[in-house]
Length: 340
Image 1 (tube, rainbow, N blue to C red):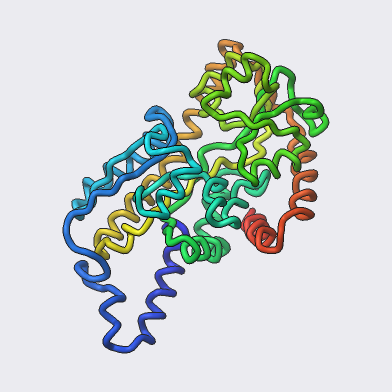
Image 2 (cartoon, rainbow, N blue to C red):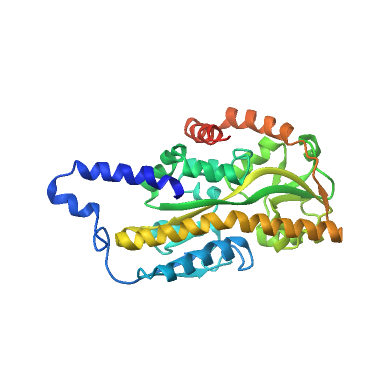
């Protein structure tokens, strides 16, 4: 059950138990209570290509599972940023112009700052750690705070792979970043990550990254393996250094349409998202292994697998604890507390 649904459902039922009798109908129960009746079509947006696991094993699984459930909910998917870039889409979900989105935590930080901490460098040990956090009570305050602030409901979360460095030189230690112009996404959390890691961040749009690396506008960048391969960065970079410095988070969020669904429809949609949350990490791992095997065989990019991760982790942890505000630090400590 994703994003601690058992705990949140228990809170809701407890609240219903103390409400006056005349208001109990709003607490749901039968399938025709707690939302509008009739068929509902939901528009789901994301920024990934149809070949990437976030679409194949994520968005498409949601579509397929809802079709099987036959609960009067259908989802139309708009991939590859058809409905706008990440920073624009979260505003559209809040306003109701887009119903659902698969979105990175840093972009969501534009409307609720604490959620961006999910993208802090070395906050999560790996993708499984991110999954455990969202299944644990430790995530409850963050998810509820996000919904209270924005009206946006979180249905689930997954890691779409760890992020790694590429450059024309190997990056094994924090000192190896000295003097390199490294492309980082321009969100506050990513820029903080750059400083914590010891990198000089340069702002380049993802769509322009290949050309920027080819022309030498930037020296290197960081992304998950599937992203690196999807835009062929191995053709313009000599090394990928497996730093695993950040779990590439995706949250599956839904706006005001959530409150218009019947209880049966909510359950069907949640179950569909849960199925996708279970499948995406395995698809990512399989895709990553195929890509690494391809690179090893072709030699088109050299794989550096002896990165001193502990040196990076220690440096980053100290920096983040010194620079997070109180609310951010509470989220970070909750994440670290959920590590095994």
